[in-house]
Image 1 (cartoon, rainbow, N blue to C red):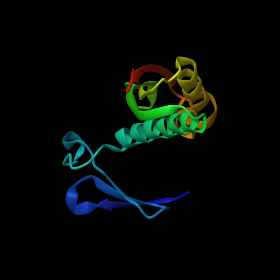
Image 2: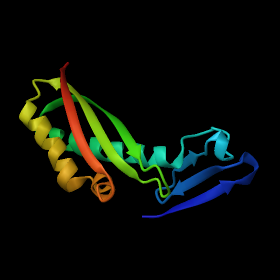
Image 3: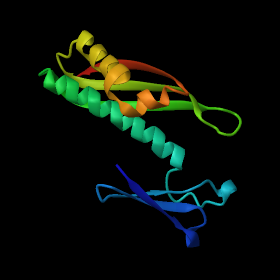
Image 4: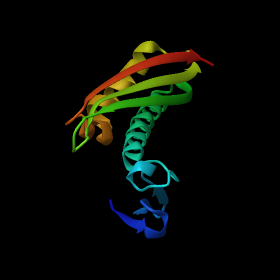
Length: 140
């Protein structure tokens, strides 16, 4: 896996990453750090990637189990250290899983499997942060 990140000098502290799969991702800094608030911050992007990684797992696990999942939303919140390096110290992923007849045990197990085994992003972030999960099931 690889990415190439280019600084857009004319835009203050904006950066464009080209991923190994050929996609572009723009990031920017806060105005108080020289950015222009044109795109997500790099740490926001990291948090979003972790949320998408675990959501991917949960959806895949439930689909493979032939559960009637119709939607999955993850609200990820994080706290950071007060001093540099301002690593994430706490992360919570709250899943809102929508479907028909979803069994609570199946949803809970899918989240646990992602959290403990499959989600590379959250497992890696758990080296510095306390990662917790919560969920709700919405009948569709």
